[in-house]
Length: 286
Image 1 (tube, rainbow, N blue to C red):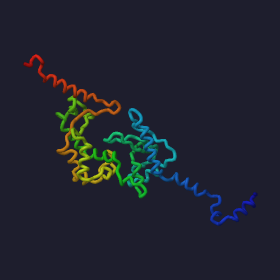
Image 2: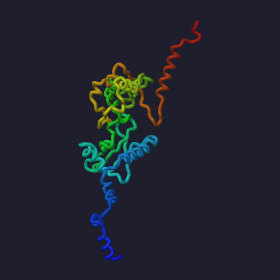
Image 3: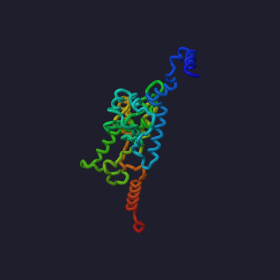
Image 4: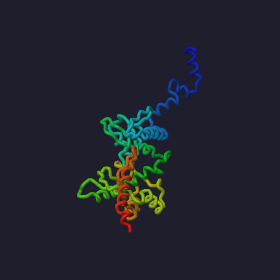
């Protein structure tokens, strides 16, 4: 069992094993290399779902949450993003990673954000790092992401509708439901009586298009935008959702946490009061 015994055992070993003597095994090397690679797509999906459920479970939902997971090579993940987005997001280096609500017209959209060493932040979509033959995120768009891109496409027309209803360049609008004055930031434009969803479904049925088949691309302002310019402009989507078949109304922004229906109640009360004033009294009937 001494040194001479170990030397004899090495002499009996095949040449391939002699070369590996005293070096890490294949399993150990795979473990070391795993720390240098980006995490698996399934790992990132589970991580996104975990933090998303944590944020929306609060009332009101959390706007941001620091990501404190160990074993995630964020640098490798970010460098796997398409060029030149990868170097733009990485910047001067990673200080920490946040799970944060994105500034988007569609409420409830969360994305991973990188806080760089200079305290600036950049949003990125982790699915873009897995655009390879083994993952098919781009073959089928996500329903909520397509909805975001469609609403972003008609946003300038909704802003134009609000501007047309401003009187004497004042930033106050009048609700079409209750008749009360609304500040610009609390007044929202709603498709009525035909909803936005019905107009979109009608457009998709007319052109024989599935919602998930609409290709998207990254947009700094809203997160996603329609990739096919012809579909958006020449394909008739803008015309179908904002043209003659569409009508709008102004109303107060509803709060999800309190779910306010006060404006609707005020509107119904005004209608009832006007109806009572217009009705003749019992004594006047002859």
